[in-house]
Amino acid sequence: MKKILIANRGEIALRIIRTCQRLGIETVAVYSEADSQLPYVREATTSYCIGEPPVQKSYLNADLILDIAVKEKVDGIHPGYGFLSENSMFAKQVEEKGIKFIGPSSNIISRMGDKVVARQTMKEAGVPVVPGSDGGLGSLDEVCEIAKLIGYPVMLKASAGGGGIGMQRCDDEESLKKAYQSTKGRAKAYFGNDDVFIEKFIPNARHIEIQIFGDSHGNIVHMFERDCSIQRRNQKVIEESPSPFLSDSKRLDMCQAAILAAKTVDYVNAGTIEFVVDEKENFYFLEMNTRLQVEHPVTEMITGLDLVEWQIRVAKGETLPLSQESIQQQGHSIEFRIYAEDPNTYMPSPGIIERFSYEEQKGVRIDLGYVGGSTVTPFYDPMIAKVIVHGDDRQEAINLATNYFQHLFLEGIKHNGPLFQEIISNDSFVAGKYTTAFLVKHKA
Image (cartoon, rainbow, N blue to C red; front, top):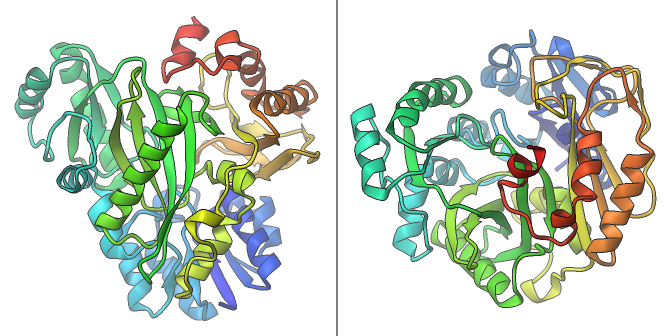
């Protein structure tokens, strides 16, 4: 590949550009009017403004993005994460243009992007799934009936969604009825599909995912796990690897289950198998993410691999660069998502970043979306950057993070840096004894 269009924005666009620069690949960036001054726009070989800030008029404008790709004669399109990354119709349009979609095929995205279909597929393959509805639920009465059968509490989710968007815990029928319309509304707004389903809520759970990678020659490997249990409003804020919770035997079981899941659908390119794990280490399939994850740098830090490079190579038709035996888990890595938000309420805090010190140090990697002078607008996810630390062991990684956040200068907006300082000094976190309820429990 000589030229790649990046159908995304912010830190993930810049991160993809950096790998392309190293590989000698030209890049085409797209940006909305609100993002014209962001670093990735300047770093790309060529950049195009694609419209007004609202996503429907810019980053979800598939036809315009494809027109630019054809005009620029690009060899591939990398969708990043979010936006069009798991849109099977967009992937199919890219394929029909004779351009490589840097991700799985449109068929795989369609099959696994629907959470209900994914559940059924994994269930048939013998991968354990959370008890819940086996199909999309068309009416409130049907939702309530299934909830009674599996028992409260339950999680109401968008069938076509991810990232915690629209997801709500319901402890009784009254709360379920209140959540039903809002979940369908958010699902329609974000994913263009208002189908919902429910699952049994697993108390005191860990959210652990396995990074998998496949090529078009039938090879599939895993790259170990990421523990994503520190969450606010069902959205991840801290991820780490190895998980401080898993035993070696259970880690192996989960990685093998992830390989089975990927082989069941003949998976190609980067993907993630997400599991919920209960107090006794029983694990259940949640979903497959048919794209690169926000937290992929954690895996890169513990393996020394560049997952974007692997994505490009696989999209070109190459075999996986390494066998399973050659992929090793070394040291410990933790990722922190820095958001422009009030650390107490989690409400977005748009505005101008007056100052942002982001110097990388030994063992500390910064994936930037914004710099000093940038404006965080209210139109998109307010993640400013990701800080990823890597040490020989977990305590060294925590020490590196502690030092970084003690010296973080981020002025002009509210941000969650102070929250990270509280988390990494918390005894339960230091001991590795936390669940998805950590912030709810300790913020009180």
